[in-house]
Each structure stands twice: as structure tokens, then as C-alpha cells.
Amino acid sequence: PDCRGCAASADWAKHRRHRPSPSALLKRKREIIRDEPFGDDAVMATRGEETSVGDRALYSVQRQVPTEEETAQQVHDAVAAAAAGTVWKHDTLDLRGCHRSGQYIATIVAAGRLKHLACLNLEFAMQVTDEHVAALAEWGTLRRVNLNAAQHVGDRAVTALARCSPDLTEIGLYWNVRVTDDSVALLCASCPGLSKVNLSGCRRLTDVSAKALGTLKHLEYLDITRCTFSDGGLTAVVLSPGPCANLAHLNLYAVATYTDVSFACVGVLTQLTFLDLCGSQSLTDRALVEIAEGSELLTYLNLSWCNLVTDVGMCAVGRHCTRLELLSVHGNRNVTSAFVAILAANNRGVGLKTLDVHGCVGVAEDRDGLRALMPSLTTFTHHT
Image (cartoon, rainbow, N blue to C red; front, side, top):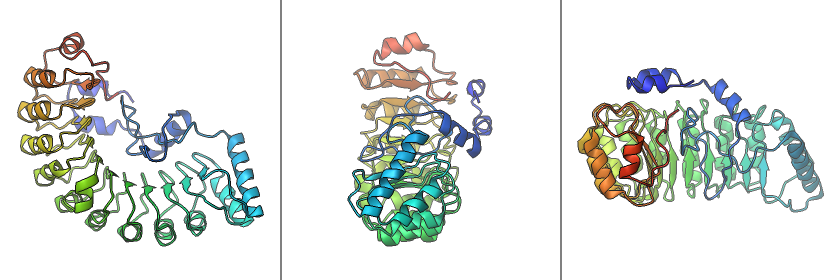
């Protein structure tokens, strides 16, 4: 749905009502394809509600989604390799969006052990159960697993991964409403090398999971969109040695439980380059100043619908975050052209490409005026 009509009124609640349902997301997932790696540079699926400029959240694809023919050939080759006991020439089993994923996995497992299977991508796959994932996990070779929107997968699958795949480095569990603290805590304890974790939409998780995440010494990527952790949970993550030293990507989109107490602590993340605080209604200038002064490497900062923020916080962002490529203050009626001037004075290079000030009634500059101040700008809409 087009939420542009909401932007002028800065109505965050109305914007939330316009977001599509999980079933609509599944339909869009199958209709629209993006080209994005699922590996060292992966951006695993996060929220999926928007297709904003620069937002790779919904589509974490390794290459174009395989056609039915390509999937069938992939499975045929895997079965042949497993039956012969030879090394499979690929390290990835890619069944994204496949309607017969469960059947295909059962066929492969029945044929034998698939050697060197490192990457399993079952994003939006159909007919996949805990048993299917557990059967593949038992081979002990998995390092990167994408179970985003695999609706019938839960604790038993995650527990199997924890027990059988100690070398796991990436896990995607977007919109998994079955997973609980028990399996997430076990996963963090058993797979200390985890560097990328997507728990977006895992609504059953509590601060128990947050504290477990804090034990990960190599955590670089964390999406906890809509995970209802408390201030104590968020601080348990960001103030722990591993995340504090390494976290570069943090998505806190649409969480209403945090206050300035935990938001201010985000400023300790000196390696942070991506921060999404969209809809953080309790974020104030005090915490934003802490973030701006501490996380100066930010290239992506989404402050849409953060309606308590004023020029005080935004000027701090302009002064300290000089590497920004995307900045959104969409829907904020408090900010004015004063912050735009500070931003322009410190970001006149080639970096800043996207600036969304839609609904910011205090900003006088139109697109031409913004481009005159910051010639690098090419995009003025982050939310569509």
C-alpha cells in the first residue's frame, strides 16, 4: 500500500496499519527478485515491510531465485552425489520459495550423506519441517542457514543446528513465531562463531535470548526487529565485549519497549555502520547525541517516525556522522533547515546519496535546494 498520504500527517500509527501481512509478503517474495549475496557480504532478510531505497531487507537472495527446472536439476545432482558418496560440486542447497522443499530434502537425505554442504537456504520454502532441517544438520557441515519465513520450523530445528553444527556463522529466523528462548540460548552457547543473526519478528523471545546474544564474541550483524526485549535486554547485548567490539549492523525497527536508557548505550558501538531506529517513539536528543558521538562510522541511519528528536540531536548527527550514505528523518515535524545546514557543511563529499525529509514541515528546502547544498544526493524518498 502507498503510505505517502500518511507522510504529510506524520502519523506513525497509520503507517504501521498500512504494512502488508506475512501472507502478502510471501506473495511479494515470489513475485519480486533482488540480486543479493548470501555469504560474507549477505544482508539476510530483516523486516520485509518496505521496499525503501537502499533497503535490502525483504530479499536475501544468493542470486536469482532458481526456477523450477533449476531447482529440480540441483536436487538431481545432489541426490546423485549423495548416492555415490562423492563430493558435491556445490556447497549450497538453495530451495528458496520452492513449493516442494520438504519432499526434495527427504529425497536427498534418503539417498545418502551430502558431503561439504555448507550453506542451506530455505527462505520462504514450503513444506519444510523441523525434521527436514534436523536431517540436514546431522551431517555437521552447515555454516550458513537461512530459515527466514519458513513457517513450520521451530525449536527442534534450531536445537538440531545447535547440537550438530558448531561451526555455524550465520542464521536467519525472520518471522519465526515458533522459536523460543530455549533454542536460541542453546544456539548461542553451542555456536560461538555466530557473526550474523536475524531474529526479526521472533515475538516469543525475551531478555533471556538477549543475554545469550551478548555472549557471542564475533557478532557483527544483528536484526531484532519487533523482539520485545527490555532496556536490560538491549544493554545486555550492546554492552557485552563481543558485540561492543564488532557489531556493524543493528536493526531495532518498530520496537516500542526501549527508552533512552538503552538507546544511549548504542553509542558504545564504535564499529557500527548500519542503524535502523525507525518508529522509536521514545528516542530523544540525549540518546541520539550519544549515538552520533560514539558511532561515527555510520553510513545508514534510519530515524523515520522518531518524533521526539529535534534539531539538537540531528545537528549532532550532522557534525559527527560524516560518512552517511542514507539518512531518513521521514515524518518528523520537529526538525528544521538548521540541521540540514549542519549536515551539508559536514557531508559535502560523494557519500550522502539518500536524504528523506518527507513530512518534515520545518525543512524549507525542496529537492533542488537540498541538491544544491549536497550535490551527491540522488534519492529523496526512503519510504514508499
